[in-house]
Image (cartoon, rainbow, N blue to C red; front, side):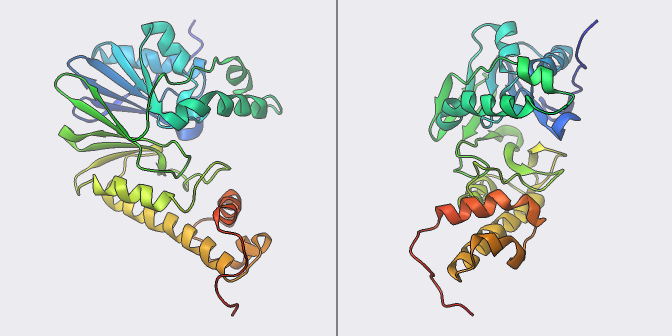
Length: 287
């Protein structure tokens, strides 16, 4: 008996399929072309990825010819080994930063899952970490014959190594965790709150009113949603800068600031923001 549940893929645009998973509400996407399939993100463990692989096979749309990791976090990379086992030397694409930091990020999450009673603890511990081997600094194209798949690093945000995947012939954008629908955007210990708005601005410049946008977690969204979330992320950045400029200590920032998201989700954003600002005292007089 299989030890996994097969992923269910839904076609959201011509030859673009998305499977939304209960665990972490993470999305895995598949892009089809005449030369085969590109799998974007591989889920959070080898066991989970076997379900993804089974779902890809059931599409009957061809072999996987490339894998893409939108960034280095485990819920987007821990299935890489399963696709290597199935397809041999299938190339795995990511930004230079993500490729270089996948192993360290994975080991950190393994240590985190080693304690407690999370139901996924064992499968996370048993997963082999396989970093991307086709990395790039700003942009790369995967040629599927009748379709070009563009990989773009728009800048830092959720991490230093985020990429977005653009399928220009059908106006589809896979945004990774630069964008989330089912929860507020994840400001973790490796985020860049001041860079994130500009990275989303570049992404928005590639969208239209009819774009189909797939976030890293949650339901499909449109340009209006992306613009709204960009504005909220910009508000986080502006609030941190304002508080620090007025001399508000970081320990008081979450209490003093007016935030677009619950303040307990912004602890790392404030810490990272204060760390990234120039030292040297107040920039504006206190009110």
